[in-house]
Image (cartoon, rainbow, N blue to C red; front, top):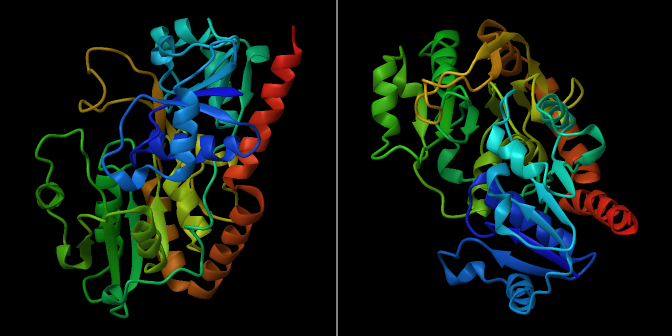
Length: 362
């Protein structure tokens, strides 16, 4: 029996990661689930979730435990041996994260890039393991149904994710507006919100940018579930995420699993699964100090992230737009790669090998 602790419910990155990973691990060994949050709807109480939660009601602290959470919240779980599984995006890991992670028996991160960052910040190389994230190809795949209402004959670039500095949402909008003329049959489709900003309005944010051709930008304000998000991927022609940094990049992987050619940054967590064969990689100019007053106190140094080369990004958008057959083949290759190598079952299998080795280490 394994004790599993996480914010299991919801649709933020950590929620999706926790739910899919622990569901897959539960197929290898029974899990006692302790969720730090509650479901918003009864539909989230799946039979598997109910079974794991029932086991959690009679949890034994002598079991090995895995907690998927921020690094400074690892005080919340118990187990005979404790593994902290966390995700981070900056070159500087906060001291309170390092303090708590050092007191565990093992630390997991999803990428080799993340492992190097944590090692540089004081976590012993012998103490840390790479356990990748994954994708559910029963939801995200090339065979899903499109949204007919989006089919207007225009080539569609899609962005899915928080509207924020780290994901370069403003720069994506500006780059698209600068690269494509109003009369070209091309659209930028945005499923971008930011629940951390009170009264956030993406239309007002776009107005502030004073873009040349706002009519070529389509806003998707809300989709009720991941199946609808998958249909949105399938309704578009290419996916954009030239982030300054990603701990992993779940939307990138989801888009690839749906067969979309992806343009993303050749830096940080996504380099674990993107390469020249399955994606179009935007070069970076340099690493720069983090500046984002929404998420980072400007009075404090928070490390660095990448500054993408947006001229190269614009060139890649143009190339994909003008070489659609090649881009489509790359997307098809990416979808097959995701199905063969990056299912959540792969993540659970890797994790379970580390669990067994840790149990054997007396």
